Amino acid sequence: MKIIAIGRNYIDHAKELNNPVPEKPIFFMKPETSIIRNNKPFFYPDFSENIHYETEIVIKINRLGKHITEKFANQYYNEVGIGIDFTARDLQKDAKEKGLPWEIAKAFDGSAPISEFVLVKKFENINNLNFSLKIKNELVQQGNTRDMIFSFDKIIAYVSQFVTLKIGDLIFTGTPAGVGKVHINDHLEAFIEDKKMMDFLIK
Image (tube, one colour):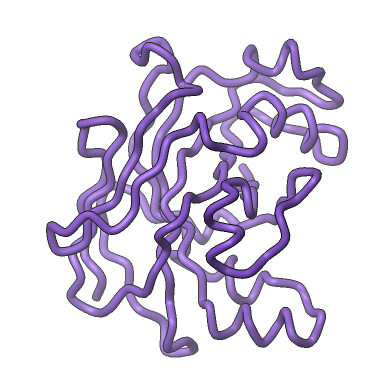
């Protein structure tokens, strides 16, 4: 199982970090060891002083596929969840300045807490899906999948040109504006529409 994460997929988020808006999906990988399940806590690593949350809708691949066309891409997933792409922003900044890969800032252990998954058919339209994050009961980030630059199906079609998708693979589909720093003792709650999907602590 692998985790594919899409960067800069919401215009407002690209702008808030002074990044150019991409013409094609940007993707990177996280290892399986980055996953945290079942609302277990995230332990703040000692190698960073600036860990940011990035709240994202996550889709789970349910069929083996490569070179998938966009019109058939919706057949390759039937569940969605929510996840946090924790990013060591200080390490990322250093890597960017030196022209180095981002893995040190994105792929560390515990950097991808995820919720349980919900069948797509439970939602009226997953391309118009509200999601949000609260920290200490304060709304800090909210988005809607209609604002994605590249839709779920476009992402699958593009990524599968380069990487074979396998059953159980997860795709983090990008974060809206409003990312920010987390601190030890923060309480995070993530929602899809009005349903609380994650509830965990930073330790």
